[in-house]
Length: 184
Image 1 (cartoon, one colour):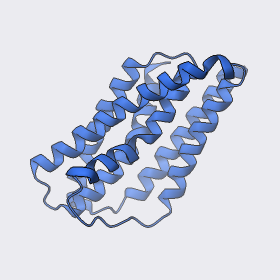
Image 2 (cartoon, rainbow, N blue to C red):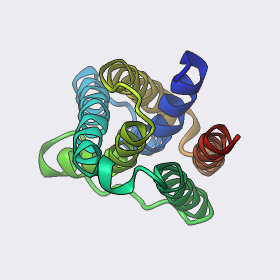
Image 3 (spheres, rainbow, N blue to C red):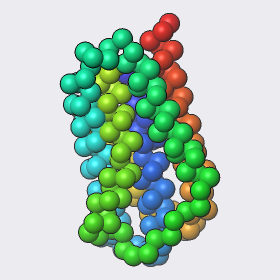
């Protein structure tokens, strides 16, 4: 898989972490350095780990679904992208406490990286290696989270929905590209 596609995937996956960080930054005004670090580190770490777990799971199932793996990859990416687009039309959930600590942080880290699990699964199905994409996804998510907290302090969530919509559309387009490359 080429670098521009991997960067697009990483950015699309980082959208959830960015949106949550944007909300957290707006709520935690001003977010201190520890809160910012905890959010960006954990979101990046989980975004790094989840594609690896998805890739490993798919490696076990690859022989079973090899004839239609490109459709499975497209379906997963379209489902995730569609979910992100649908969520972009919903009202934001207000944050009630410091989400950069404890189980709230773990839950948000998992929730924002579930999409990366499916992407790792998809990458395995198309025969892509996982370590470099996982590292790139983790770094991009961490940086987007950092940016999200800082912007959230300034914009208070005004553009959160549009960003999530674009991220979902990018994932769907990548899924279409996988199908087209496989069928042509």
